[in-house]
Amino acid sequence: MTRGSGPAKQKLRSAAQVEKLDKRYLWHPFTQMRDWEQEPQIIIERGKGSVLTDIHGKNYLDGVSSLWVTVHGHRKREIDAAVFAQLKKIAHSTLLGLSNVPAVLLAEKLVQIAPKGLTKVFYSDSGSTAIEIALKIAFQYWQQKGPAYQSKTGFISLREAYHGDTLGSVSVGGIELFHQLYKPLLFHTVKIDSPSCYRCGLGKTCPGCALACAEKAEEVISAHSHETAALIIEPLVQGAAGMLTHPPGYLKRIRELCTKYDILMIADEVATGFGRTGTMFACEQEKVVPDIMAVAKGITGGYLPLAATLTTEDIYQGFLGEYRELRTFFHGHTYTGNPLACAAAIANIDLFKKEKTIARLRPKIALLTEQLRRFKALDHVGEVRQKGFMVGIELVKDRAAKEPYPLEDKVGIRVVLECRKHGLIIRPLGNVIVLMPPLAITAKELKRMADIVYAAVRMITENNLPLKTS
Ligand SMILES: *Cc1c(COP(=O)(O)O)cnc(C)c1O
Image 1 (spheres, rainbow, N blue to C red):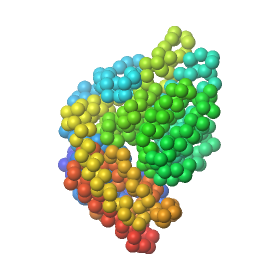
Image 2: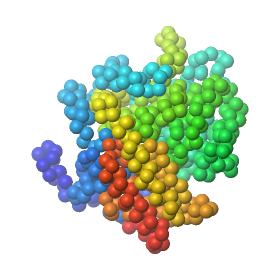
Image 3: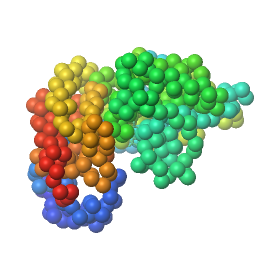
């Protein structure tokens, strides 16, 4: 384990001891801990590029970018150097009543790369907090705009949306499995159906449908606009819902509807931002400028927790006034604008330019598309969804009927465990196998990842193996 690293006085722990201590002391997120305790687990010690190394020295491809965050790879020289350099100046200072250099410089860079019209940056530490901030800004904006707008207090969100795990972001979420239990704690929101073409609620097929789903959305939006502060949407892809890709034109139409009915549009680019979908932000692909945009995951290249909520000048101006008017935005997290995290984020954004990350991603996206083609022929693959470097392979029990595997079959989990045996770390969303490799992954690694997943899907879905997750 700690061989040669760490302070000399630190007690050396064997790999076996660390494994034992994990099970004794840690409570893992989104994890049934009884299962966790019973199974051997992987503990990561280091990483380089797209490869993770565990405490036994075994290597794994990082097929989900350490939960959708890694961009240029692990131990990226420029980002390491930026964090070290900042560490020599100061690790943390507050943005409450003071400012710091990396926070200022990063804000300028974010505005430069964001869709034109987003001009102000409010920092926080996670996607969830970036969403809470977006919701509160939208709500307060209308309250301060004048008496005529005070009924605009509610939110419209999509079914099966995921915007984070804090209570405000769960309120605008719609994933039954995660969110149902907490209903009594949540505020009410108006839902529109997510435009999922694989299981179209309107029984139509794309593209012949003329975006009937957007028409349905208009019915809801027009009926509720007088009481709605904002509509919130994950642009192009609903990640946690199972990589549900939206039909082309839907996002643009939603932008038009928000303008038409005078409600703010919040784009949750937490998962899609920083090159994930093949452009810096997903909104660009439909030339959409939201009123508020939340970013997090990839912002530091996957190094440190940081998030930002960007707004238009109009929204920002709505908060200006005399001190005693209390138009202040009363919100702030202690580590807001942390200099180390901002330094990493600056280096991350600079690398996009220096290494032409987006342009170099294009052939890799095409290669991934090509690699995914063979999956479509498998008996238990219902749909393969891809937008850039976001992929969901939906496994189904019966392909013709699009019948899902029951939860207790743990099909996704079993495929993922099979992949681990062959040196690939991925994490499923129910029956959907998710692939989200670092943008820096090599063509060779990409092929290897697809090969491992292909074999694992066949192994689990075609061999009728007895259900055993160990
Ligand atoms: C991950 C995610 C969030 C929540 O971000 P955290 O940093 O986990 O709080 C919000 N929205 C989307 C679309 C996400 O994928």
